[in-house]
Length: 454
Length: 44
Image (cartoon, rainbow over all chains, first blue to last red; front, side, top):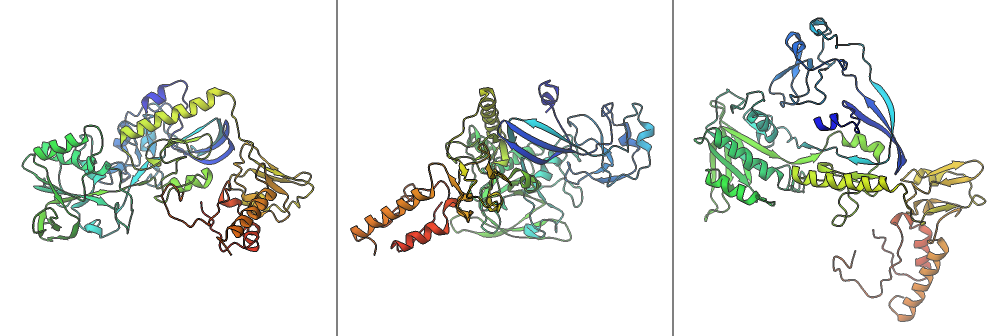
């Protein structure tokens, strides 16, 4: 991120969202809404304002485990290294303004909207952790049931508990931790897909980390299958077993809380044991390995992007095996978890592919389109506008003089306009109505002769 | 698609390739029925 900011050829807009996309490959016009940060470029992120700010909110980056001042740095390696104000929490006392020697705080900053022209778009909207519903496996109901992201922050040296693992209910270091795999994934009632083994590897990593903090902690992973598919992953899994992490192949049946101790009583069926024992185990803490979901804000963005989605909610690629980088819209390509659950290494691989796909497109200087495009006959066109409304690609405009005008670059030649046109004024080149009619007639004559159909 | 998934289907089925299922209009379906087709599958 820092390299991106320093690169003179890259313009970086933070706190920004895309609110409109017009145009086509090579000539996109993007409207960006940049939210006010309430500090100017002079801010160097020194942090003296944080100390005097009396207003707080739960810190989003630390999963709400620590309070955060209304004026804050998004996270410790944030780019740009500039404070921002959360206006929902701010009480406008002006302490930050008074203490700032660089006069960087400005309460009057407004959101700005502006347009940029680009040749191609790389979608990299990422993912969010699945949030289990209240009470599912005790989540939200029992304090010591947390998700993987919260554990991730707890184990981080710069996190809310500076890397010293403790359980939320009483702050004591846990003596036993259970990781529950496939929470919200590989589950027909939630998400059917597997999060590509990412949660398996994250659990193994965190189980190892917990063990390395204190080898006496009992660490158990309840799993369906361990999906350690990747270079060196199986070895990593084996190493964790050697370090004493226990793996029990089971789905969790029920979690109850011992209200006196805050411990969790978990029913597990050990499906690999000869008698498939169902037993109740007691753990100090339970970590839910929740599924990877498409970014929560993505649907709002897709209102202007209009990209096709897979049934899982992730973005659809051009071809599942032969082209997993491009989308079906020329000039828009995919990188990372917006396309499907994937780990860092695969995201980087795809990102490089995306960069090269766009680079190839832009360095060519010209873009060839197929001639299979809709053409309209202005003498037949009644200017009713049904084709323009039906067109998914917004390729048709209606003019009083010329009737339907098809944009040859936006048009993908699908023929939806042809099937809705009441006056047969619009056709697709090489795939005209008469051609289909003759084809249907010819086929059915043959079929009748063969006696296959009656 | 039927080929890729190795699906079995009667020999009397005749495919008409369209660019997109969106191109299939009611007229085309009705024409097929008119000419004696038993059924029309719109698959994509």
